[in-house]
Amino acid sequence: MECHIEINKARCTCTYEPCPRKGKCCECIAYHLRMDELPGCVFPPEAERTYDRSKRYFAQIYGK
Image (cartoon, rainbow, N blue to C red; front, side, top):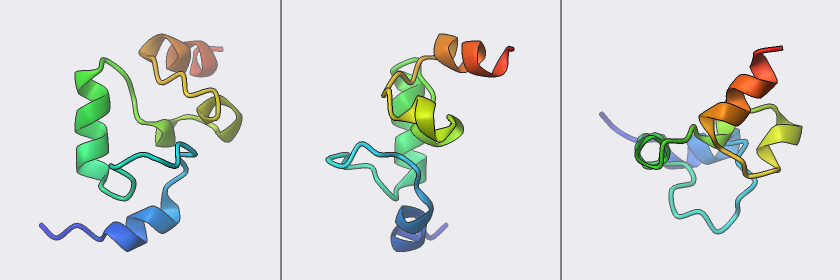
């Protein structure tokens, strides 16, 4: 499967600019799951900017 990095970057909502995985969604997801987290793109913008990628934070936001 071909990775469309530039297309992915254009749609990426992650605000962590020095990230080496930006546009490489499969690497991003794998990284965050290894860290027991979720990628920034699953959070609403105001929550994503906190850089708290924890599953607990995700549940707190969407469990209301």
